[in-house]
Image (cartoon, rainbow, N blue to C red; front, side, top):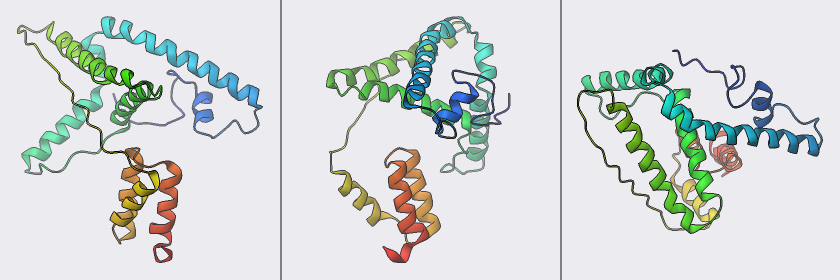
Length: 214
């Protein structure tokens, strides 16, 4: 399976091509507010139903099928092994769209926990992840001649809270002087959701496009 990727022009998954264009902001400007709400309602329903499909997939899709779907994981691992053999321990292969999608899956999972703002819900974050990892590993061992158990203990640590403006000021003071390096750092911060899209755009404008104006 190849990892060629088009964010819109792919076969239907949870989203149709029309859904993708709508969520990406490429269409929908001509829709009424009621039509936009209806489209989001339909998307929410499909996402919820897809989540309820996951246990069926986990219990009934074979390891071979999952192996074919996740070929980009094996490709990344082989590339990583080659780098290690070459003595380049600090270099990692590029994350392909498939691997980025796996990160996005965990992103959505974490947001579903945190977005309610209920402290007790945060206890679910490591528990569900630990249970999923342990069950997945054990399931891959069912067809093996050897049994080996696994225990996962995820530790979630939180930093100290600070005002957003202070956070942005700290980022500004730490950006490199070179515009190219500055852009790469800003992009890295945005990809890891340490800043918003609008904040990233403002930092790019002040530190990459017009660095002397800051």
